[in-house]
Image (cartoon, rainbow, N blue to C red):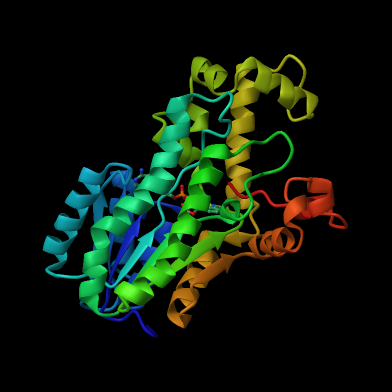
Length: 327
Ligand SMILES: NC(=O)c1ccc[n+]([C@@H]2O[C@H](COP(=O)([O-])OP(=O)(O)OC[C@H]3O[C@@H](n4cnc5c(N)ncnc54)[C@H](O)[C@@H]3O)[C@@H](O)[C@H]2O)c1
């Protein structure tokens, strides 16, 4: 596939970040797009703002869909085929994802399973729903988004990330396993796995939103205290991230700063990341590493697998600010 012109792409999580940029850039390159999101206002905005930058004949539609619910994925599929008047799709970007459920030991089972359901089952349900339509394309590409945490199941000391990493390892494993399966049984479709490092998006606030919480600046004191319980506060105080005797407002400001810094101080913007992903898909790559941090962790973990969770040894010789911080 050396051009997206005239194709139809499905983008999940199209309301923000990389999904929104994928939708915009695909549309600008002559590709019709059906984008879905949990946040229907956000994905409607993506559709409205992507259209003016697109050539004539390009249709961009926004759809409500929770990818962790198979019935909603099937309804999204039927809705987009009808709205685009097509009987196949050419590209599927399974991009929707959230963080949360970091600790299998301490976090609630509900949080853990919400993250796993979006990040793994969402990818699985979309592959089930859309594979026949990619086969019908005759030249289909399934693009699943994993993460740096699909190569390395850690964020660093004291920061467990178990639901996310488990799901992202599953996405990478599934995608790699599909390579031979598709080659053998559906050679008109190929699969690519996207492995981003830190990309500047609102994923922290959007992940809280997926839990039913408002943006950090609008959280009540009770919501803040529940989100950051006393033992987590104590750890933040001893790490110097919070003052002794921190108030709910200090915690709120910390969350607001955390989200803003994650978005604004990233080495790569969502637009740059989307451009790298689309270049990778066009070039036929099956493994699309996004960002120098993802490339670095990939090389380190492959070179020293036994040291993967001995951070000092894994990152020996590197400045601290070069250690990865992807969700
Ligand atoms: N930002 C990073 O640093 C980074 C790094 C590695 C991997 N990733 C992955 O890249 C993908 C895109 O992340 P982003 O950073 O652009 O995040 P983002 O929050 O900006 O965008 C993700 C979108 O997915 C939507 N979404 C969440 N749950 C959903 C569900 N159940 N159904 C449908 N839509 C849902 C959100 O509402 C949001 O609009 C995710 O899979 C994420 O895990 C991100």
